[in-house]
Length: 302
Image (tube, rainbow, N blue to C red):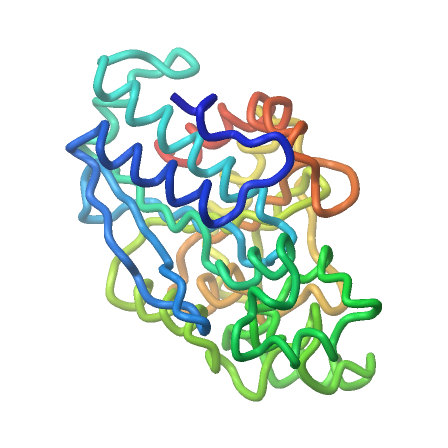
């Protein structure tokens, strides 16, 4: 089924929603809905299956130009659904039995406005078109990461946000920008606020945030990092070949993984898929997915 939904060059909102709707239609046991609306009024979808008491959370496309992460998460979710329907194994594991105890909850695209801006230009920002145009050089939005208001969602979470904001100012990031501007205050954006509210109201066992690129796994943040987080990261590293790493500079603090660990005291991970130059080409999808499939399975059942 997925071959009908993987385009030649990009994976935008139109293709993403076609794939989401096809999965929902084909697998009646999938639960789905709209988590919230983006700044421009686009739907932020979620889908889930399995035990809903303490599921694992996957969130993709925090950054506009990292739209390939959405496709990775949706391929994995569809593979899980197919295995459940046919009671088949994935990577030698019968996933159906695990899903009776452990559920999966995915948000394929947290930043739909940013994805559309990256792929289709400033006009995709609607009322924020002029802001986007003034924030980029030569009207080229290919490397746009922020939401439509020029706020980098992965700098907008309340995890040592004040210190990160000072670092942004020292780097001359003083207002709306294509990347690394954390907004006027933590959780100022509807996209980040919706994710935080979800996590506060649902007892996720752990969370994985998908970014690109680098083939790295980030796992720790401060004194509240759970003791088993490093072990989980090491297992994921062994089966994928991804490197267990620690971020530096403006990549420290303000991120979803940082907030999840510091406030909820549960394991949180950032997975940097693929290697190369962002935005990664869609031709890389097969090799990326093959390399991390077992890691995704283990992150769900551990």
